[in-house]
Image (cartoon, rainbow over all chains, first blue to last red; front, side, top):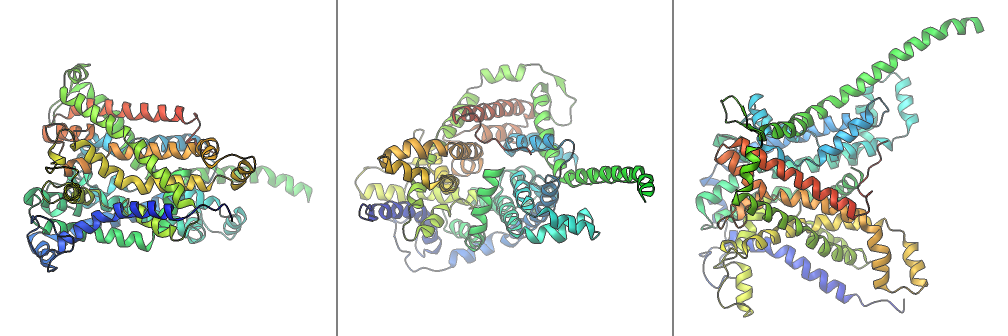
Length: 271
Length: 311
């Protein structure tokens, strides 16, 4: 205890970093609430006569509800597909079968292929499937994620084999074993899958940018980028839109940050 | 009794075999949806890309064999070299972020009050939509009323505001800074997990032997952290080359081509100019670059880092 180092330098360093991490949020929030000309110099640190004018402006000047609906629909498809498909694949990988090593090798090599390096053929294939400009086409490339398969695999491996044998003797099918025995025991893996696949599909920009053609199919990130290109930075509504888009992701993260971080690290270190 | 058992044995072996085939079949059925998705959106695109890069092809026309023509064109394409250079710069910046994150992980790992709060704040930017992050940073870097210029002028560091995103010198570093800001928390979490897996006894034993804090960091912490650093680097690399969203929204690749990276160039070639075949050749180079760097990083980190048991 005697040679304990003073704590204040650690706090000081961490507070500086925290400020750097938080100030950009504040600056945008301030701008979105500001009642004055946002280009007045010097910029005010605290918004003068704060009001929600810009938020109302966003609501009336763009089809926010439509973008929101598209984003929700695409994310819902991606999340549902991820939970079902990844659980199935994760369960399969806990069994021993011929060719298993090959399948794992295939999954691991697919992890090294960033989606951005496949955009041209991916676009052409989606065109051939007739899914361009549709919710399913937007969600399809993200309907299964390798990291999440390994999260399920690790979590299923922790289930005692005797329990599975007992379920089998009781006449449960393999399908039944997954849904009635494994899934209830793998709640944190399910949470990880839901959170990660939601964040990834909610934030996705490049894919919708390439494959949506009609304004009716645009998702929120696309709407935000388009809004920027019409308006340039001249209006505070852009920043209000930004806050409206960020809020759901932030809320979800703050509610489930434990599962989120746990999932990321377990997936990343195991997969 | 024994006779009955013997009589049953061959039949049971038969059903067992059938049972086993049935189960194997079922296992493959469970794998089919995921495998199909990876086949359609990873494997086939990769192969198609390579084929396309050796062809002359535009939509709705029959393909013609082009040999190495597209690759030859690449050699004379100044924009390609600029984009390649910028991409390498972005990748090379990942270690800066990792070094900062390592310092933060060490600080957050010490048992101080409120470390969970610090951890949450530092991690907060990672799950955010990158398009929104790009807009936030455009505004921070704004020439007239951006906070960065305002603070620098207030502190008399500069006389005239710097148009960060319109400057050939500052545009790329500005995009990289925004990228590091977003990835910092993620690197920190990976390294923190690695730090927590280092047994306490090692540090205690070294401390008893008289090793200083600094020596313990270089001799124990860093070597044992190598797999985590490798992991952070590979994920960071994949993530920063994919910083398409940041570049597209913050600068659009400009001014000139100062922030053009390979992904934005591929996008412009393919979907702006419908040169799918040429864009495919750029993609092949891009992919080879990624694999090469990942391989090199793996060698540097000791060869077996990132290895996963295949059992």
